[in-house]
Image 1: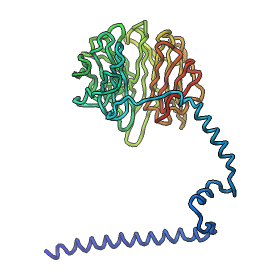
Image 2: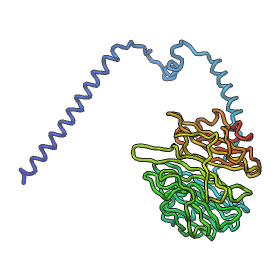
Image 3: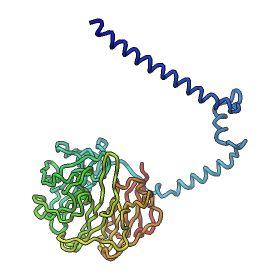
Image 4: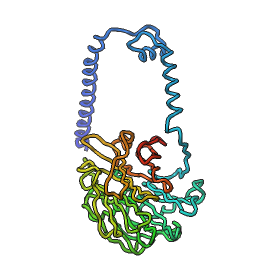
Length: 409
């Protein structure tokens, strides 16, 4: 027995000794490499130099002195810039909930009682408030998945809610969903109503003229191609679904908007995206904007004036409520190794498009535009739009210029 134990003890001892020797050897060699460098550097430290003097030397190098007037002038300029900064024109207050998990992916506001709101969280379920955010209740905590992509309230019966599960932002840690849910009692209880393999849902839209007709922009799985993706339509309040727009098994349906007066006209945004353990594809030739004039039976790809080729990434849509010929598209773009955020506008129902912004929004998405793609238009003013990227911007002139409302914090 002692002989059997002796060999492992010897082996462990040899390994430990070897590791220690290697560390000592490397440490000595490192000292030998560093020492000649420092020996070649002239001594420049002053005896008994106070820490603040030492710091000042670093700030003014290579000059011998510092002109405090320059500092005061720079301070005055900085204060003036801050005072006139567009980001100071908007005041924000946290409305909760404070215990929500992940990002807020969607907000649905009761059309007749704006104090009642629902929010969907990337990994926290659905929260409800009936007092304008003073308190919140998690109404989706018992569901099998708590990653929410989109919410919608029935305009004819506000007790009916739809929730598309699975955060549509194509992050490596966006949690998967299992399709569509419906509540008929203002969120107290929920029923699963299909599209189980859709994985992530970017938008849920209820026909404003017929609330039994519901559309879902299904993204499909992120790490593997699959067929259950694109634009889905239900004619019976979510009991049955049919896919009405499909581009490819790696192209997501991510957004859809409806004409405010012609209920048969819809615009849909499709987004080519796929991820793996070692790669990410969030731009491609199959990304694009489609239009239907027959309620979704047939679709036409819109191209005139829009980016082409492989530079198109995630797309967000917003339609004018006063002049529905006006449509805005917020497009994440990649040209070579450069990323851009651009807003395109049509004033003729998608027949032609023009880019609205100059360089103001170019860096809005940084290099991760798959998180954003959200644009909204004021229902009372078609020229006022909000664009959400890393920062929040607003335009009051149809996109010709933008004002920053909030930074990334």
